[in-house]
Amino acid sequence: MNSLVNYDDSDSETEDDRSPHTPQVPKALPMNLVQHQPQSNTTVPSSSPDTLAGTSSFGSLTTQYPVHVPNYSSAYKGLSNSTMKVTVLPPQKRYQPSSEGVVKPYVPKRLRQDQSNLSVEVKGGESVTSQDLISHSARNIYRVSDYIGPHLPLKYQSSGIPTKVIFRMKEHTGPVNRVQWCPMKEFSHLLLSASMDGTCKVWDAVDSGKCLCTISCHRAAVRDAQWSKCGRKILTGGFDAFLHLTDIETGKDLFTAKNEFKISATRFHPCDQNLFICGGFSPAVTAYDVRMGKVINVYRASVQQHFDLLFLQDGREFLSTTDCVSRDSADRTIIAWDFATAAKVSNQIFHERYTCPSLALHPKESVFAAQTNGNYIAIFSTQRPYKMNKKKRFEGHKVEGFAVGCEFSPDGSIIVTGSSEGSIIFYNYYTSQIIQTLSSNESACVGVHYHSVLPSLLATCYWDGEIQIWE
Image 1 (tube, helix red, strand yellow):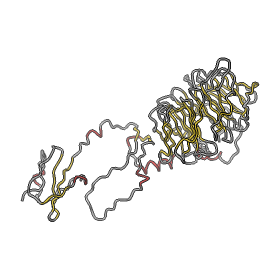
Image 2 (cartoon, helix red, strand yellow):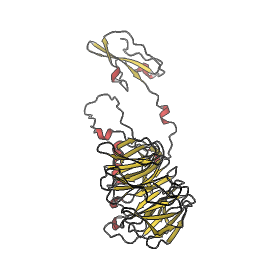
Image 3 (tube, helix red, strand yellow):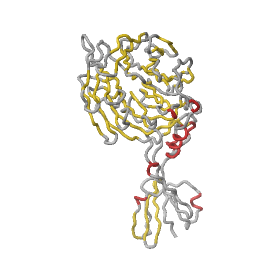
Image 4 (tube, helix red, strand yellow):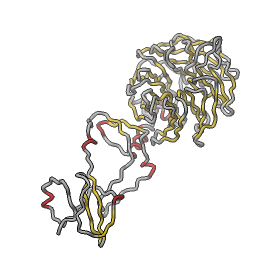
């Protein structure tokens, strides 16, 4: 009896010793290529050296199918024991011969979704599944830090001045634009960073100084990033003109919006986390509602670019800084907007010929600070007409050439700022005097942020891609 399967270009000597009555079961069966034809003894020719033709008889029908033998050699080139970035892909369907007593477990659709927006650093080439990735996030990210835990029930003391660097984190390959501690005190060991290398990273910046996960959903530089109040979502905007709202625990992209301009600033509404605004290389600032999935307001000004955005305490108004400077006064340098009506409240707030790359809100008093390119920080009232305090001016650091950020300490007694020379300067808010100057990097320090639980813990970021944690 002739064999029903014809093998072409086979070099194996063991195939001749097998019994012709032994059924040949292929390793992979493409179900969409199965055809039913009347029974025939005609041998089916193969179409290529890598394709085998097989037949199988079922009663009066003969099933004819091609079996493709893929080449796996190229898939393993370049693998080593070095650190690799692994992106979880959807599970592939694979044919397996039926066997009694074997039940394939059901995997929910939510766990089969593509996790490509969340990349995890894995040592030694160890592979991970979607479930492993979610478990990794829940176990290692959202926990109470051993170091911060004892301080949570205590009342925050007066802010202190750090004296030494405890962590230097250098995994970003481009300048780091922003660092921010997680606003949830239970998870405040987490530090968010946004970089010009196109990624955002979440760090354990208190216990280990290690990167816990990397978000790489942007295709260009990430200019700004912000935590949600719950500490489980991150809003990012970049030079690819995309907005992304990402769930850190699952890696799922909850909201995506494409703008017509490069984004340089994003801010959540302080009272409703479903609302946020963004601005950048455009005369307009746009407001989004995640529930509706669209733009709900557009705030237009006669400018070319918006540098920074800041919501005031109740969220009814917000401020934007622009690149517009007139001859004799800085007309429209800082603009106040009504959030609900998109009306311009005031554009005559700052009357000096300098732009303001960053803004900061005082945690207790009704004032805000504006970092200016005149190498000083100015103080303004948050109440109309937003009058500038001419008796308070914090100067002694250099800013020109970089978008240097400034922040208040949690108790409001200290203003801390970076500088284009790489120094960190601490000012006494009440006396406007310099308290301390720290320097540990030759690159420009463009971002600073005080910890909300530990009084002297500070995060700083630099133009060379380094992040430092001070204590």
